[in-house]
Length: 364
Image 1 (tube, rainbow, N blue to C red):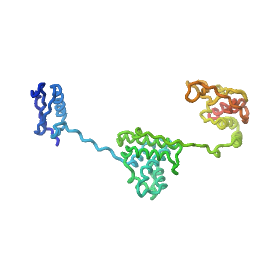
Image 2: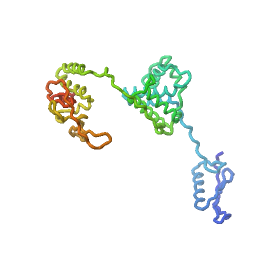
Image 3: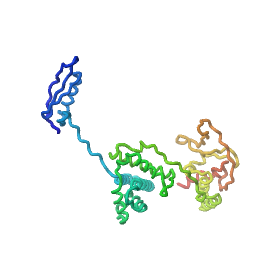
Image 4: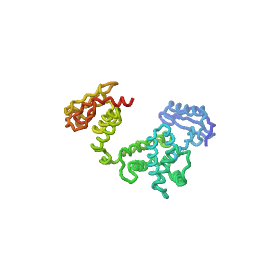
């Protein structure tokens, strides 16, 4: 029971020991309390603390005689499903279309992982359509959901675990494992696992921000997705003959096509990304004569500075800081483009001299 009726007495020295002791005496709601200290300074400090609390209007606990502790507010509670919908709603306005899709896919995977072991689990395909197309798609709030979708969402809202359950390492590991698997149960590629894990970590951080979790549980988990051997399907890569026909078709698109033929030829024969090809312009690029040596891999990149020249970094041995000279490759046979007379010995940029600046001109 708390009370504001507090009475204090002066500190009194008790000489019942060789050094003596100093006793603080006070009463709360008529119930006396006392406490002894070895020195008067300690007794004065304790009595000052009690008087400050009484002066600030704080209630005292009659049973202990000390200022009553304020009642702790009940921790915020929410299910994962509720939190995931709030997270998607918060992120939605500032995201591009692909990022919205990535968040919806990741939240669908995580939510299914948190409810798969539940009894009367609905049809998985219906659950995925309900979560991906409606629950985590704020744009669908204005259109009515079909009956089976509405039933699946109602079931998910009832069966979802609380956010506090994510403090258990086993639960977090189960979710990470689900993010690293495909629908058929086989390991997913790293390009699939990483975005889902990033969304999961960000959603947990949002839960910490809202007070639903004391800390991000991923910080305590040492987990790494299993390595997946990825191979390129040869059927999805254009053969040299197909690439030649494609480049010929590009060249037939008029004056602009003649320039773009060299651009796309670089992308195919040198396996360059467009952003690595675009900086190759006449003032900053140099090419050896046809069949000559001297070109290196990786391709040139811009040195630090606002307008530094294109330089090729020296190749290094793994685990060593000693530079290793690059080995010139044999010059492969490549088609020639009109107006372009230079070709690298490695086949990286066939016939670029006359069309190096063409992509920039074409894009203006």
